[in-house]
Each structure stands twice: as structure tokens, then as C-alpha cells.
Amino acid sequence: MAWYAYCITEQQGLQNGSRARRPFPIENLRGVNGASVLAYPSGEFAIVVSEYSPSQTLTQQAIVDHARVVSECFRTLTVLPFRFGTIFDSDEALRRSVRANRKTFLETVDRLRGKAEMHVKLLLKDGTLEEAILEELPNSVGGEYLRKLRERASRERERQTKARALSMQVHKLFSPLAEDVICKRTDSGGMLIDFAHLIESNSVAKYQNRYDTATRHFKDCQVTITGPWPPYHFMPGKLRTVSGGN
Image 1: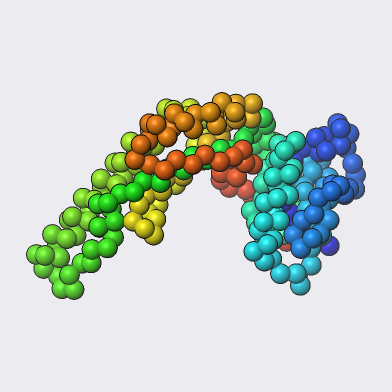
Image 2 (image 1 turned 60 degrees about the vertical axis):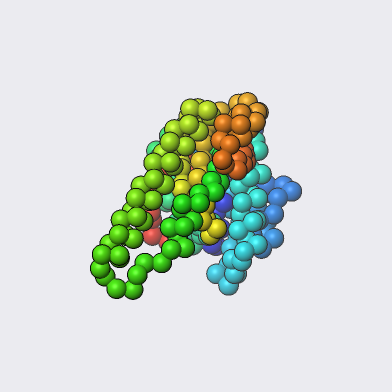
């Protein structure tokens, strides 16, 4: 039997402190391709899974289904989300993976217990950046080419400096426990900075209330705050792999 995996959690949270020996259904929850969702016990953990057949196709809707299952579990449990498309070929492959990473899972559950992920997105309309993107370099190498190249490099440094300054200001305003920052250009020539923040779950309302302060402080930016989300960006960087599992 192959299993599609959504997340891992503490078994006691699903069983009111007791431990099961066999997979048991999680009521009122459907997974990818409409499949039933089960909790597969493995020691102190339970892996949230659905039965999976290699003939099944993982569609765009499956991405939504995966996220929904993880989010529903996150409402009442500490969860460690698996990447979309994680499949274990057999019961033994699933159990071996948990055993191989048991210490990391224990440490991560303990670190993320009572935590949530929030996102702050700053969209900055940068006219100089837009000009840099639209302006083409000369076809031939020469003085003009080198001048344009230096201008581009200068604008890129300005962009990076601006991004670092905004990052420091956002960190100071929201004071997260941990953060992950992604900065990228938009198709329209602006700059999008996405801050993933790890915070205490009981401080979500306080975090959201800082939205007005953020919009006043970052006047040249479009500010968006979303969450709480499961801690996708704060999982351990590397897990031990075992044969028979993806």
C-alpha cells in the first residue's frame, strides 16, 4: 500500500493522550482526489496520509487539497508539513522515514509547538528598477555597452540596499521569533519582498493589529498581511532519506 503524506503530528493530540496501533480515520476531512484522510501511527507520532495509487494524477486541485488538509490539522495540532507530492511506497518505507528522522522531528515539534507562520508582503513600485529592466543593452561590446552595464549594476546595488533597509524596519516593527525573506522583481518592474515570520500563536491578533502602523510607516509600499499559516518556511533544512520513499 502506497501512502500520500500531508504532515506529521503528535499522536496524543489526535487520540486524547492515548496511542493507536493501526491507522485510524480523521473524520470530516478529504484529501487529494477526494480520498479519505487517515492518521498512521508511528511511535509518538502520527503521519496524516491518504491511500495512494501510482495510477492517480496529482493535479492543480491536489495542491489545494494538500494545503487544506495541512491547514485543518494545524487548527488544533502542531504540524510538520510535508512537501506537496510526498509519497511513501509502502508501510515500511513510511515507518523507516519516521525512525530515521525521529530526533529531528521531536526537536522541530518542540520548537514549533504553539507557533504560527505569518506573512508580510511589501510591494514597492520602483521606477528606476523598471527603467533598468526595460532598457536594452547595446548589441556590440564597447564603451556604451560597459557604461550601460555599470548603470545596471549600480541600480541592482541600490535595489539590494533598499531591500535590506526595509527588511530591518519590518523586523523591528513585527519582532518575529524567526524569519525567512524572499525578494524578487515583479513583471511590472516593481520589487516584492515576502517576509515569513514565526510568532507565538497567541500573539496573532497583536501581529495583525500592526497592519495600520505598517501602512503608515511604509508609505511607498503596498502592504499585505496574511496568516496564520502552518510553519512551511520553518521546517528543518535536511531530513534523512530512506529507500522506498520520496
